[in-house]
Image (cartoon, rainbow, N blue to C red; front, side, top):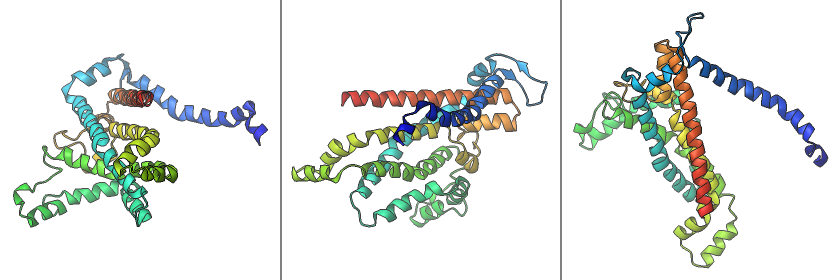
Amino acid sequence: MENYLSNRKAIMFFVLPALLFFLVLIFVPIAVSGYYSLLKWNGTPGTEVFIGFNNDVEMFTDDRNFFLPALRNSALLALLSVGIQLPIALGLALLIARKTKGEGIFRSIYFVPVILSTAVLGQLWQRIYHADYGLLNSILEAIGLTSWTRGWLADESTALGAAFFVMIWQYIGYHMLLMYSQIKTIPSSLYEAAEIDGATNFQIARNITFPLIKPMIKVCTIFAVIGSLKTFDLILVLTKGGPLHSTEVPTFSMFRTIIYEGRFGMGSAMAIFILIECLIFTILIMRFFKVENHEY
């Protein structure tokens, strides 16, 4: 087996089909979208007009596209995901991993929202937020805060926050499970030695747990940021970008531009920008953690 695994030609023979499949499935559509982004095209064959980078210019200068507000919304979601979602997930992972009674039950419960269909979650939260019979308004009325009741997803001032709350809540369990699995790989002897030396729980977490799970925190940060930048399905189910485009995100702008308006060139330009944006943020996060590790 060792000789077989050390044979580079054999490894290439088995890896090459998967690599070709990956290239065809991923890079060919990206290249085609890049070509479409240079066209003014409504999707009908023979109507393509080459316009160069005009779509990219219009994307950021034409207020009718609502692309810049959508970018701001996705950036805000990314900040909230890193600043709220990940700390909560880390806190839950630390609590559950310390031999908590019913550890498996808690772990499973927190992960339930992740495995539920986004369409199901969207329909569920639409009913929770509903102005007339929603659970949230019923609770507010029950505790005497009737003046606070409203149509949460229909009000321009609250729709974005209401939608983002669901997105952050949905994936807390996902990041919690990733961090939890990394914490469980830390030898218990390290914790026992620290406790014998009189270290507090905070000192143990800061000096043992955090440094050893930093690679997983990096992965979770990348997943949280990229997931925020390309979020789509929950916005589609909850608000469809409304009211008045207040909850629109870049992927929904792309979807609306292509499907509703039939502007395939502009929609492709948006898709390419989202791809480049995700790549840039991934590189920046990886470099940030690399610098942190050197300092440490």
